[in-house]
Each structure stands twice: as C-alpha cells, then as structure tokens.
Image 1 (tube, rainbow, N blue to C red):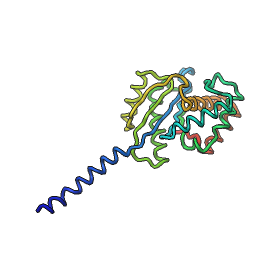
Image 2: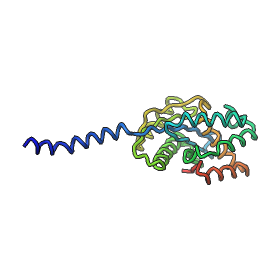
Image 3: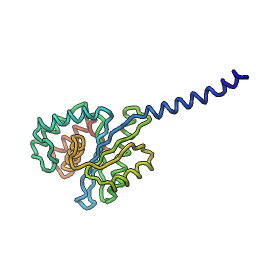
Image 4: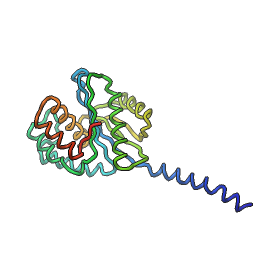
Length: 214
C-alpha cells in the first residue's frame, strides 16, 4: 500500500516542481519607450519601443559609441544637426538591433496612454515570439512619464496579460536606449513629413529587420 500511495503522489509532486521551475525560469525583458506627436493635437501619434534582455548594458555601450562617433552625443533628435543624425543612423545599422525596435503610427486620436500601452504589449509579445520565449516578466521605462501615467499604462498592460516587474518614467533622454527610441520616432516623423532621405533609411531599417511596424 505504501508503494501505491507513493506512486499516486509522485506525479503531483513532479508537476509542482515543474510549475515552480517555470516561474523561476521566466525571462526578464526590458522595454524602452518614447512617443512623439502630441504637439499635432491628435493628427499624428507615434510610439517606439526598443526591446532587449540582459544584454541591455552591452547595447547601451554600443549606442553610446555610435553617439560619440556621429557627434550626435546625448542631444535630443530635434535639437541635433541633420548630418549628425544621419551619421548616427548609419552607425546603428547593425545586427545587434535586429528584431528589437517596434513602432506604431496612429492617426486622428488622442488616446495617448491607451496606444502607448498597446504598442508596448504588442512589442513585448512580438519580441518574445521571435526569440521563442514563452514566459517573461517585463521592466518598462517610458521617456517623460510621471508616476500617474506609468500607473495607468501599467494597469492597461496587466489587463492584456503582460507580467510587469517594474514600470516607471525616465527623465528626458536618460539612457542611450531611450535616445534610440527618440531617434527612431524622429526618423519616422521626418519620413512621414516627406523627407526622401529619411524614407530611404526607414525602408533600409525595415528591410534589415531592425525596425518593425506593429
């Protein structure tokens, strides 16, 4: 009888162990977000998300080197010179950024927080699928957001099933990954506004799978 009892309880024990292992094995995914277009009063709104894992420190270093080499440095996209912007974009054309930058373009809407959350959720799930990650927890940093906006976006994300370890705002252009998101937002906006050069760069990024529209 003791042996039979043991046999019955073993599968339950094994299942619990697997479940615990699954929780411990959840990948940590970082998402750096910037948005542009609120100044158009709802006519155009663009959200960009840069997604990565524990290699975020290496990516930061790579991007900082690109900033220095291009002379763009830590200046916001709209305040940097056009030749510095173009050089920066040329330098970041690297396999290091493949399948990492996602964006959404929205027209005639002021649902800024909802669309920011939507873009983040889609970016995280698309990235996870591309890396065959079935279980993840996220750390989300959004440029210029305060506590109130971060809480609101966090609530929306949790309703979509996104697991969040932390969500917070960041001071303007606080990190190289946030500045990258800002640069891509600027690139897309300039492209939409009719810049032929920026349209060509955007197409190049999409073709190389550095940039993906959601």
